[in-house]
Length: 470
Image 1 (spheres, rainbow, N blue to C red):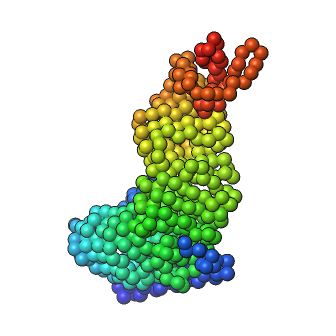
Image 2 (tube, helix red, strand yellow; image 1 turned 120 degrees about the vertical axis):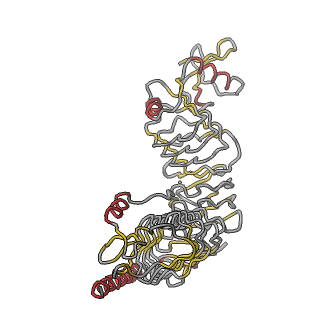
Image 3 (cartoon, rainbow, N blue to C red; image 1 turned 90 degrees about the horizontal axis):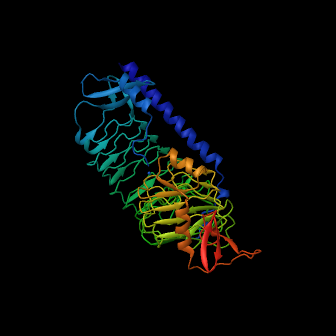
């Protein structure tokens, strides 16, 4: 037994040494001269995401220890805890060894929905698996050992954590690891940390500051906002940070995916000249955000009436959630609507699309529950998956035989064809508009698309009456 314990502890030591080597390598690769902190002028995470095969395999090979209380599986000379026989409650300390083997990992979903209040991990634990403490609603305190290297996706999601003691030699924090931890108010990241997944603190409504120890080679904090200084990227804006307007500092070149997710205090964001990349869903769930402004010297992005456009790609990138008005006309010349561009914009009832539009990204109008009508132009050649998901009042208008019609059929979205009755409806909509009629021999014609983008029909004046034809 002592020989097994010795081998296990040697394995733990080797893994910690490997982790320290990775940290040193990261520090060596990063040239501090490339990043000057002074240039910053201060002025839908899936909680259940994990490897299903890994989970099933763990339980197929798991057994209980001699006490019959702990389920575990052997991996690389160490014990990975799979669960506990019977419920765990109150203050719990995880044993450092089981049947002579050091406990080196907490497995995926190991303590999901347990009624733990605090948990102390032994100094043999190297990793905490995906969703290991998911929905432990009573869990308020965790003590992390110096041996800990990684925290998995959603490991502490939807808990009542308010205090995190220690951080050890932590190298990576997974996607959504601390999401929905409403009682967290501040967190300090160690020097060793070199990888943080998106949405790590999603929905932490009272988290006002994310601090980083000054020796960290990758991350830095400025006024409580987390930056990846190796790539000049704004990584995470804390949900509970005070202030309704935020100006992204000069010198920042990228905003990460979900960087401002669920930041409901914000009403306006101002982007600098230096910004060259904005990740998908950067402002997801920002319920009060009404304007995204861009410095006029930015060569990539532009703002039109508070809506963000990627002018280099002819793409509408983000429509702010709280922008006023129930009807929005996408400007002529726009060729693409980005993924999740209108996600959750429940105030919108109608979107008018231009004939220039060729693609609509994945989830572009996801959860736009008030949308009732969109006319899809014949110019469309690509529509992403779930583009209109959960738009339960929406009826699409499409041309017969078009790509849009086929998409509507494939995804079982209600639609109507542009019939003669539809022409009359459009004629009524534009009948009182002043338009520029093109002159022609005998008859004056104009394309309806000039005043009602998305239509590809024509009208003409006949004895002062408006007539619509194909």
